[in-house]
Image (cartoon, rainbow, N blue to C red; front, side):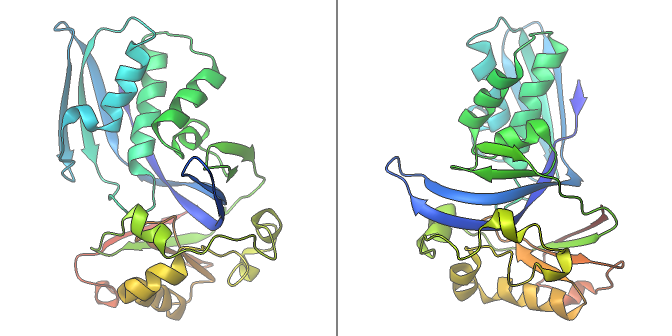
Length: 272
């Protein structure tokens, strides 16, 4: 079976407070992109899980990869044969695009569908949330308002149809711990649910990502990307999540030069 796990962007992100369990209470909007990995698995007769990778190098032990963890999670409750898994990685790491979470979610759904496990949707969503805070979003893959640690999801009537997106991920890594260290949690004057109802033309300055202030101080090259996208005519520009990617929304197809951005940057454009 072959599936194509897609990326997402965060539109706005508020860090409300740190919880007793060590997680942070937040609110954000998840919006799917067309940027995709390729994930294939086939049944084997060894009874084992064998993992291979192409595209961006994944590294680490196969057992630590989220797609293998997704298989192990279902295999603990259901009878599954061995599988050969191949992941062609396109979505960059550390970008705030949810690539690893998407791979895991698509693995869960793919195994459920291919082997006819008939897992109830709520149980599948619960399993996904155990793998990662934003995993459950990729099972629904429609615009959603997220709260809690990112696992509480609500439908959101938001469409960016007709808008152009330009996304840039420079070759720098922002650690999650490092990103949170630069944030002072607090309730915003205007909640994201209210701010997101504004027209896209009025999002800038109203729909904000709380990670930007601290990360821009530590990584001025990320701030420079935001400034360049605004200079190129973007109506709204923001970091996505706590990663290093920055995206801009344009009314018309954006025009840019590779030299506008740091050497080695990953650049992606699409129209919604």
